[in-house]
Length: 450
Image (cartoon, rainbow, N blue to C red):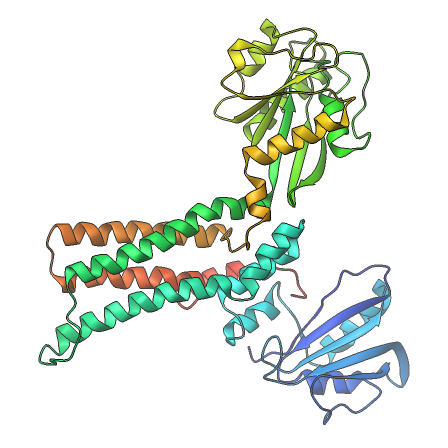
C-alpha cells in the first residue's frame, strides 16, 4: 500500500479518449514530473488542461484531474489523465509514469485499496464486479442495490443482533454480580437465532431470483429434424439467425442468440435435430445438442403438429432428464389444436411461427414459468454472489447446531462458541473477517484499471 500504482482504466483502442489512473501518496509528484503545468498545490477535484512532456517534447495533449485524499475512490491521492485514444499515446504516457516512480497496478488493485482503506465493504466490491459484467437493466439495478450498501445493511443488522447477544452472555459469565445486566437465557438465544434464521432463509430464497437476474436464463430448443426449431429461434429473436430450409439436418451445430424478457437476459440455443445419422458432421451436432440439454434452465421440446407425437419424439424426450420442459406443438397453422395425452404433465403451447401473436404467447409462457414479472416489479434487493450464498448457508447450519445444543441442554458458555462462529461467518460476508488469500483472490478477478 506504500507504492503509487498506475493503470489504464479504459479499453485501449481507437476511441476519442483513454483514461490512465494513478493512486498513492506520490501520485501528484509523479504526474507533476511529466505534466506541462505545476499541479503540486492545486485544489482537489479540479481539471487541468496541458501536455504530457518528455525532455521538452510534447507527447500528448491531455486533461489531468486531481483528487486529494481522503475524498477519493481509494481514499488516497488520485490523478486521472485523459489522453487521446489509440494505443500509442496511452502506452507512451504509461511508460513515462512507470519510469518516474509508479508501479503497474495488479488486477483489481484500485478497488482492493478502496476496501482496505474502508471506503467500501466486500459486498460493495463484489457488486461493482456485477455492475461491470451486467448485460441487462435488471442486473444493473441489482448491482446498484449492492453498491449503495443495501445488502451490507441487511447483513450488518444481523451481525449487530448476534454481537449484542455475545456481549450480554460475556457480561453474565464475567460479571454475574451486575444486577442490571440482561440475563441471557436459552429461550432468548433461540428467539434471536430464529429471527436471524428467518432473515437468512428469505435472502437465500430470493437468491434464486438474484442468480436469474445476474446470469439470465439458458433455453435450449430440441426436437427431431425439420420440426421448425430454427424458425422458432428466428421468430423469438426477430431476425434470420439460423438457416431455414425444408432439408432435414440443415442445422448441424448449435446456433445461439439472446433476447430480453421482462428485463431478464435470455440465451437461446437452436440445436441440431436429434436423430440417428451416418453423417459424421451431423452426428457431432446431435451429440452437442444432447450435451446442451444438460446445461439448460428450460428445454423447448418441439413437436410437428402435422406429424403428431412419434416414436422418434419419444426417444428425444427420454434424453431430457430432470429439466423444466415446455412442449411446443409447432405448425399450429396446419393442425390448430393438436395435443398429446402423454405430454399433459408438461407445460405446453400451440404455436405457429407465421403468427407473431403466438410467438408473443410463447414469451409470456416463458415469463410465467419463471415468474419473471415479479422480478421486474421488485426492488432488486437480491444476493447473487456464490461466495455470499455459501456463507449464508454456513450460517443456517450453525444456527441448527445452536438449536441442537439448546435442546441437549448444554451450558450457555458452550453455546456461545457457536454464537461467535455465527458472527464470524456473517462478518466474512462483509469482509470484516477474512483471510488475506481470500481478499487477494476476490480482487484479482477485476481488470487492471479497476
